[in-house]
Length: 270
Image (cartoon, rainbow, N blue to C red; front, side):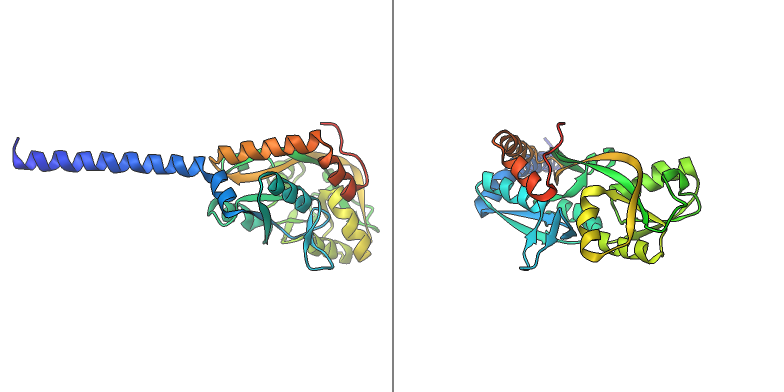
């Protein structure tokens, strides 16, 4: 074999070896995501932190809510502690993808678009979404009346996608104002800066009562959303472990206790 061909053969073999090692490394990372969490003894959970009664900071300056209790119980069943990191909803998925968070437990609705970016556990709650208007408003009775109006919605949420991609093509153009949290949305609705918003009834009740907003829901629910724990793409072992924990929580009554604690009613049969 000539010297040139020999060198090419060596380089080719080295490249193949490095490529194989890279693939093994990626597989190992995916397989060991759960083990890595258990080794550090901590599950880093992404939440909004401003979305009562799901996840919010209570009077003791601690994160609290339905999502928080679910996440704590999941962590307990993985033999680790939950550490909560709060940020705007629009930044949660990017942070998960960059390994800054282990999971998201912040009412992340399952959608086909999100399935392309992240993985989900089985749903842990179903929320009914309704139209909400100022108490004095009589011109909006349903989403069919949104044409030409100003509609407030959470930035980066499934509700924003619904308004832009599904509803607007059906009912005609309307202005969409986006917000980083529900409280600010309702403040603008109360003050008449927007004509309506859409959100689920569980989320709105405590905020309206606490702040005295003069708003009301109208019409029938426009859709039902299923929320699940979000995990970085490909972390199948972690998803399986979380699904097992969720199933056990429902079987032993722990899930029901958490649900009743926050919503004063039993969870609906799926």
